[in-house]
Image 1 (spheres, rainbow, N blue to C red):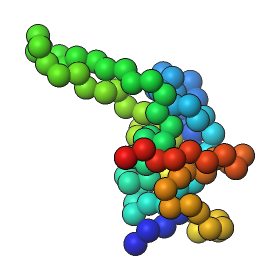
Image 2 (image 1 turned 30 degrees about the vertical axis):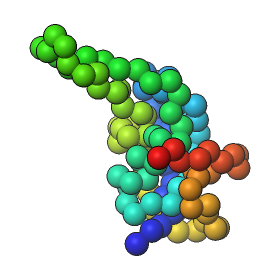
Image 3 (image 1 turned 45 degrees about the vertical axis):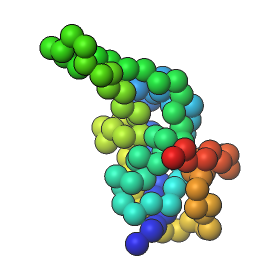
Image 4 (image 1 turned 135 degrees about the vertical axis):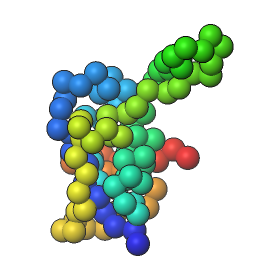
Length: 102
């Protein structure tokens, strides 16, 4: 079942925030917290940085995690008291909307 989830920053000093263009609480429609985190990460991506796989000379690059995907950097909770939500956007606490890139 799709519900509204609220994701909020816990640790704004974490280095992963350089990969997000949003650093405030967001709300998103999702099936669960994992889905909510993935959608928030897709909607807020800022630049894509890669790190090589360790021990492999010609390994494919692995994208670094968004702060929205890290439970020690952002919280995720069901948001039962919120109003209607757009299906394909995340909404920031100041009312901004960002499309979820597929």
